[in-house]
Image (tube, rainbow, N blue to C red; front, side, top):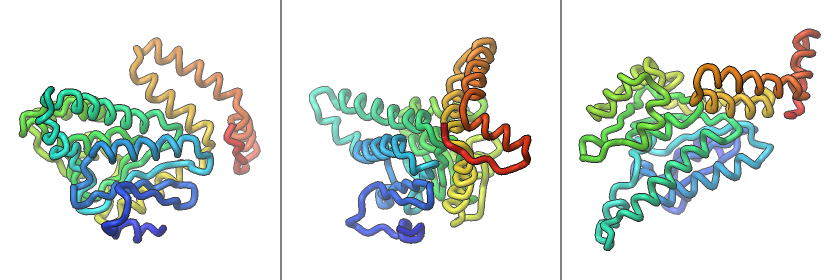
Length: 274
């Protein structure tokens, strides 16, 4: 399937499109009429796709994109509200949904391959969380980001987890307390996205960036990505102790041996991904 074809959904297409561009898997949220809200079905489908990709050696990177004017408006509020008629007023369903979404977000972090968001429109609440959970993010100059739950009496507590691990505290708190959207350029300034590109080019830019990472040793990327997120939660001393262990393990890898030799011999390395 071509990139252009993925942008023109039909009523019979699935809620998540999956295409391969070389070694890059492009996952496209495909509920444009619902502003790509994260229904329970969308959460489960995306989580399953990530699990499949994790075991697929042919995939060396992932681009997460979306069809329509919105990247994602967050949780499906109509779906959540419909459960208020249950005897527990929806508590069990709310807990199940939030925990499932949190597990899906963590699956992005734990995936042993780079995940790059391509944000073409608004990313709000859990949609903003989805962007923040990705390793890298490319935004259209037309994109906006917000955690507006406070406006409807529902503080964006789960989006807060990913957001606060991407941007400084004062900026995160401003987004969470005011609910006001920020433009793509501001999102780049505070570290929520890596780059801002012309509208309509964000998907291609995200694919190009992912392809650049895909040229590296898959083993090294896997080891490094895991280490990055683990050390970030440690004290300085523990982080250095852990990182030294990772560096030692990495030095013993075939790809490190090959890469160092290639550097010394001034040639292009041949990766074995081990």
